[in-house]
Length: 300
Image (cartoon, rainbow, N blue to C red; front, side, top):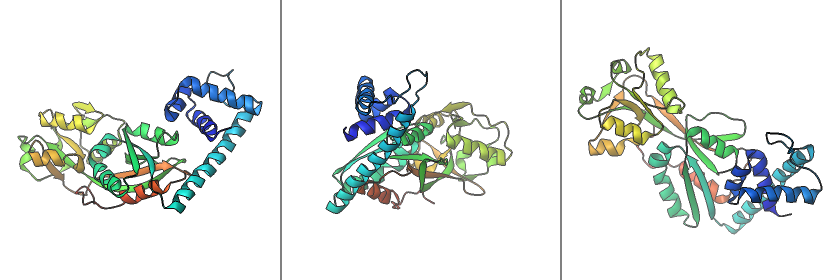
């Protein structure tokens, strides 16, 4: 029995999906099924209850899964300890991140990390926030990066930094003549928002509720920051966005940026990883790099 057999079986149990387990391990769905049957043959026990419509383990299957987690944890710790002894910083780090962080916050950190540790590969996937959590829970990635992190029992949350929220308008907009604006002054203007399920949109809605701002339903809704910015640039409305995501457009003069009066509205960012996961030397160095202040103006 190879260590890969236990990993594939654990991934299958945690995702409850042959196709997802196949994707995580870079093999075919048929190969995952064959691995599961091979384990059943090896242990002379039925591990998966195939009489059920939904994925379900037998008692024997649950015992194998629990033991597989222990074996994999011990194996990962052994590899990490050996790398530590050899003072080796290498391997691959897989990251799942929302678009705004991946495109505007992460690049300088990755650039520094790869400069300091050239033997490490970093793979970044851009995902919606809910899918980042799913990737962490399914062990599809090593780290996740999200805004407004939500506590979950199996996920460790490490604070990353804070984004300042600002108002953006097209340069010719009447509000663009100001440098600061109160939330109340936004009433009556066309507003462009993120999709309702995106955490930053929920935070903006909360700002409006706190200030009793009515009649501010978005005229357009998008799932990513780049489309929101383009819609504002062509004068379809105004928007509240993280400051770090609009620095290039503000410098180029295609967008105007205004501070919101009153308390400073911020968007907390966090690094996620699965609780109990063995962090390799490379992973620990990556977390250390993200904790550095690289002088971004979005930091508080």
